[in-house]
Length: 171
Image: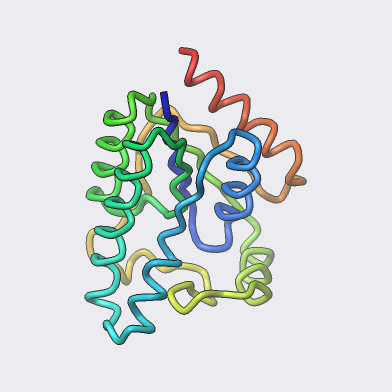
């Protein structure tokens, strides 16, 4: 049974770092929504069209991988109900329990430092996300989830994520 893990958290929270390390440990493919959205922006789509198009392509690609038996780690925030619906449908298609890992960086100074220092794609913000500027956006209330404080070192975070995923798959 292919597992589907949904990452969650604001930009700079450590989602991608944890997703890549987790995927390596569990033999999964990481799908990064920002790779697709950045390509659409480079191709000339404006933000208003690139964002929904990126999610459509993203979940189509995820479904194709799941149908081929691949385990998938979805690297995108779950700030819109449609994203949560698509992830839950993908998990059901895979026969995977709905696994949500939230990355949290409560230190706003550290979050700003991470955003400024990273090699960002065209679609990735350089400042902390202001959800009030995005109509209909709010962090998912989905439970259960594993919340990781990414101010901690990466190795124990990944160990916790692996234990969560493996425990959820057996449940």
